[in-house]
Image (cartoon, rainbow, N blue to C red; front, side, top):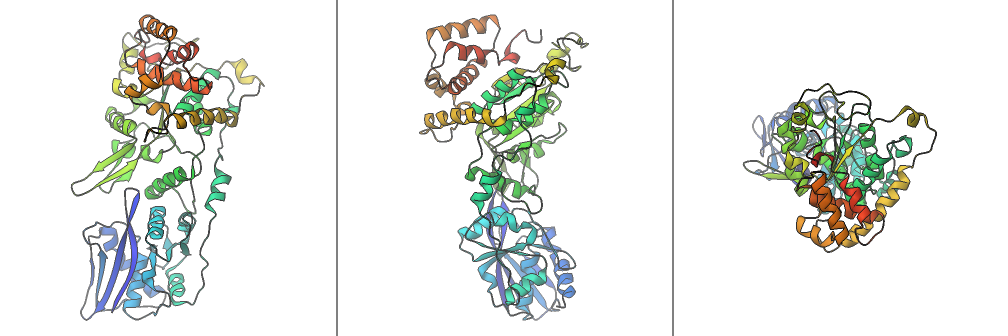
Length: 513
């Protein structure tokens, strides 16, 4: 007898429906075909143990399990539950009232028949709804994540027996329903940190506001303990709130990577990722034998913070150059390729020198001649070229730390950022793929960031006197356009240019001289 149901395989951040067919016929042995990996091949033992635990039997006949289409490689242990149910139906141990082929079924079995959570639930649920399946049967721990998708019956089961009784009509399991829009609205701005908790550092807060308003990348240079990490962690709190589409896209990536945790639902706040400097190239950008999203994709629509930038491996930093430009990561293998989105803001921090006290107002630097320059040279020019704002962070004085003056909250800063972003949305309405000033290509900068004669004279003087490099020119114009947007100014004024010029510390030829 033939039994059939459906599962799914996830490639990149998209799901493909997999047909699971089981026949029980005369003969011996258990045959699993359709390009399964080792974890799927081992499902025979998990399925057999689960069946016996609930009083069923594994037929001592020829069992053929086919995962179609056969030319797509399948991986993971989430096919246990559909295989087990199909074996029971094909061997006529159960007679389901509800048809197995009307549902997508996924779940990993324990030896006692309990279900373990699986990865990639959200893209599978989206694909199941798209294909018109009646419902999605999966482990109860993953049900809240799948319930983000409306118009699909999400049936969460704790054990294999729950699934059997559901299909036989012996047990009624209410589909889990989530009001996605209400959930999104309630958790949209649920951040733990706030700029109101930061004393002093007004110039750095201003730089962060400009970065958030224009989508600019930032590098902070300052001694240990100056507050670089604390300020970086608060940047997501002033970015514009995620749209529902962005939230779904972000949640899909974390679902595929298995980073949502148990009973997790929609990610409604902008992600903040802070990998350690010992991270490998593949873990940062994505990859592996079965490609998984890396840290830059996990920070999609959010912030990637690289603390102690010069300590990262040169190769790891260099592979980031293309994703920073294209806002996506393409990983190719011999027979297939996957693409992960990577539209993130890069925030980096570093000490000015190995000892950390170069240019410190109170402590003396002990680094020898040329050491500071060698330290800065660990960051390549092409990577630095993609960072718009260079901000010097100085330590907060005792008086500033102990002052009771109230600081501006993230909410009020965010309002200004949103207004500036709305101006940019109108400006780039007819430019697909460009959403902020930082994304402007060079040819567009000349049209959008035109400056008057006084501004040109100021920029020429600054480049001559401060020794700014040629790469600073476009960056200064982009940042000054953002500053003008924050001031709701149609044209770039001289004061906007003057402020933008001061954010190019590392481009000054005499900075580490």
